[in-house]
Length: 294
Image (cartoon, rainbow, N blue to C red; front, side, top):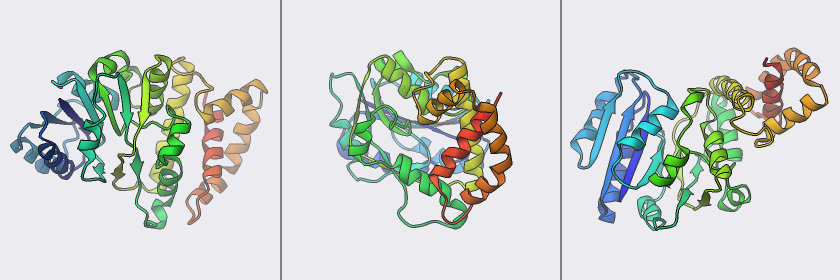
């Protein structure tokens, strides 16, 4: 019936598995919950080992780190059911009928189902504001907003997919840990004209990166995006940032913007680390950083 697949790294995923296990038993379905740690060697794995004492649940630790894309593909290969529910380790279902909602969307129709995500409503500490603002404004979208751009508003942290469809797209292991797995996966879904539907079945995103860490990860994501474009894995018009970059290159403004970015980078960064981080400034920062890449 349902295989729940959770890749993790240096994270206590036991509370998530407890909640999922409880809901699966209440639904009286055939299920399995597979969790794999990507060779983190974390002390938290002592807590995660408890998962192995639960019915239909498994926790394993890889000897070598294989990356975010590869570990998801590995979990899919090891699963025994046709319906795959992928969840990130740092999430928790909001509703008590989370599993029931996904089960009700399982039928013969070949499609991908995305449930959505939400962030805490309480304002966090100043050094976590940028990630919180970005998450609430750009990721925690209403069902209505997600349906306006179904593929780009899809995130791989909470989705249901049939194994027959997953085998057509999978996660591209050639991009390794350059991020933007969500972007490439959704692009491949769109290119193959695979049906993607959005439902109201969100999870909470647990924990927030500090603004400094989030900026660093965003820079890594920009490098990943350029890699996808240069390797022709996605079209440059697919995302807003890359479409602006395409226009900048067309008008031969790349060097000018890169020069301006290097001068203004400290000012932009200071704004992003303030108590009122601007997503417009954040977009300009990423675009400037992209123009600086060779």
